[in-house]
Image (cartoon, rainbow, N blue to C red; front, side):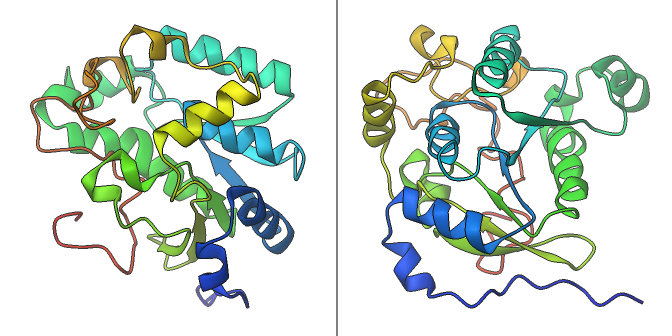
Length: 244
């Protein structure tokens, strides 16, 4: 029996907690050999990808292709992958297509059981993929929603196998204004739907436009008491009952 893998490098986490994103990314890139970034190519992810170009440009870029993305998301992703020469790794659920999902789970699972839909399309594929890595980078920020308000810069995340990976949030303390200011300064292209009133863009059936008075993620899973797909809440030591 193989012993579980634990994520515990010798590092001063307090120092990282107050470090600028570039320094956090440099630490991760030089400390964690098997490292990846997961992104849906929205604003925060673009900032991280842009900074990684000077640090570790060959880092695998994990993209969860649910089959339900906006065409604009796939088109923008493909343009950026080509322009920035990204090492894209596309992840899919075992069913592989929305049509096959409907055959197995019935039509419109996202309306009947959005948690299950997210699990088979996002959580499960990512959990399996992360077995090949010791750490991954995410664009989570504390200002995005109340459930993300306590996001640390570095945390351990337990996989179903019992292995741990480090999860790094270099932009945890940044605000949306910080992100958009960086994008403007460096003339980084952005997702075309941002200009149409979307502030957090997921799958077509589960995403709506929001106004400026709402949380950034208020347009996700409208009508359900759900604001997270699950990839950021599984296997966390500090997870609260509400997050579970």
